[in-house]
Length: 198
Length: 198
Image (cartoon, rainbow over all chains, first blue to last red; front, side):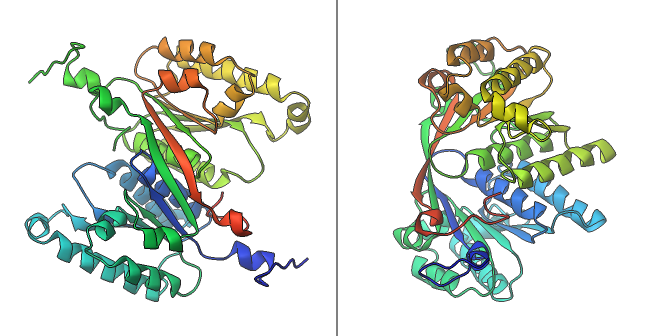
């Protein structure tokens, strides 16, 4: 049965409509929720690409190890989908001195890379981790990002994380969630710990 | 070097302090963020247990498939840690009629099971998915849960998800994040889709 609505799309078309998801706010869970979405995508057999715009030591190392393990499982058994995780930003291994010298240049090159991947429909789900940081700094123009996202071909879903999502992006996104810190143990002197914070 | 603070714990002790994390609010990302934490835990070689208190058809099927795949990978190669995912609530396969008849009884039995697992230190990380729903309904007394969590032995981390976390739990938790809906495509008629919503 074909349903229709004001936009004259069928239910199936609406279900296949690509979405832009923004996880912002000062609370926990922006990146972890994006990685949870990557699990759903993997289970659907989708191609998942995680592009990390700010890398700092051990942060996100756990999610990366686990998602890359799922990607290897796909290669070996065909289960799930392929997974790529790339560090595009400052702190990148082997490029530390360059990164320290020119974080803006690295961020712009990273965005250029993502733009090319979108043009060739490289993945079904993209996680642009901490990309809001890049936009907030003015290293990449949010208007250009909104235009590129609006014009992306096919059915490519994009998740963008980081504090301080710019208004242009919030307006253009399909799903926007603000993670609000109600309480955090860090506030009372607790240190981060492996398995919980990274 | 041993650091100390007012509570006279060393840095290492503070880093190993077990935490209670609550993901609440009406926005997206409560369960997906919990599953992202499960990835971190898996990568540390921790034992992960996900206990789902409200199951409804296909929701969370993707996260479950992916985390269980990581669990099998651990069994086969030793990489990461073991993963268990159990449905304890209504909608449980094979118990549908019972579940429909007595959701409160199922929820109470589910909590009793988790309490026993905590007592024997079955896991390093527990995700009690939608447990806030159970607490909000009054099926399990939040005060009892807070007491059991406070008295749990060893280093067991517990993540509790769901809207409407009760005040007692919010007060007792170490990390509380409210996921606030800023915009959701559902609001404008979009339907959920595989890979994104489950």
